[in-house]
Image (cartoon, rainbow, N blue to C red; front, side, top):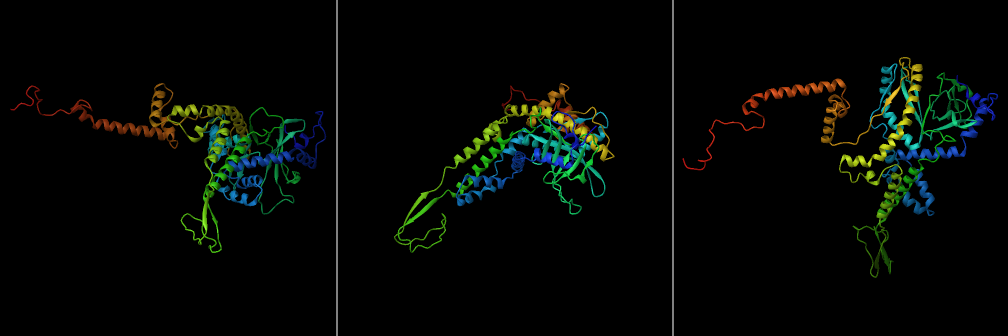
Length: 497
């Protein structure tokens, strides 16, 4: 039986149950424990991670440059290049590399209502969704996932999976247990034109018992409270267990942010100095007769008066130091996640075996994530069964007997290597031609693959039949065709008749 958060937060320090809190007191609890300066700083850090992963963060890097220099002209010269120096995205590259749990589709099933479960997974494009969840998990070290039902304008309903990162949610912990969540505050961005509350809703508080809107100060808006009757909160946290004190994973992943800032700023300096690399002209003497505003370009000659001397100063820099610094930072942060610089640059890869050896650390990291996502998917399946069975009416399945088989991502092979491996596995009874064709062309169904095999057999049967006459004449396909001329005598060959 679930209880309201007003009762869950009323536990006394001794563990005894106190008088239920009012919604106003709940708001005070949320402000004191979920809206602290450290919570705001954490949210800002994770917002930056989201921006960097999506190739954003221009304004943030401009702020970094503002803090580096004092002279405004120096700042402006470098800030102009910030939007064009984001081509080396270490955050996106490393996160995508280590997020390979769903590189190959996983196979999921339940004991009761599996057809309905598979239909829901197909409508959700669940493997694609979980691949993105895997990436967000490695980016933030903690994400929330929740199923819900969306009601469309025509009254029809469709399943939806929502994902929240630490940039958009806060956790409400038990008063006496800082490892036990009792609620989740999810950031809202409502754009309703009519029917707005007197206080605009900025957060929604979800618990095992109810949900309620809260304003920007995290004060619950009492008239929005609703008991959802699901039996448990639909939001599922995905994080590495066990839960540490304070729940949050600390500063894990900040090395990626720091590396991206360092690389981006270094590339800004690189581009700026590449543009400024020139030989500056110094004029001396009587400059009264020299025209002003002449273009200082290698293709435009300068017009100087008599008696004016010209000297040049080389203002260029060695740009390799910027490239070496960026590569050094990328190599070090990639090593933190089991990636060598050769792997990042795709260097020195001559065969599938060589690629396999380079990716061994990434495969180990992938297997380490399997238990985390197996537990998370089991919990998500249970929430899906509850939410969709209650709100979609035409969907009925149970999470009992749920199981998953993670697809094993393989190093790409050449066509010849792939065929040789298949023939050996088929001979050992580990593979078959139908499955092989479906792997090569994922758009084929099992019936399509069988029909294609039958069509190939029919075509080859026809070809062999058509070749029978030639085979009968020559004895074999590769033998020399006999002629009507008698064989020549080697003893008389070359002699006159």
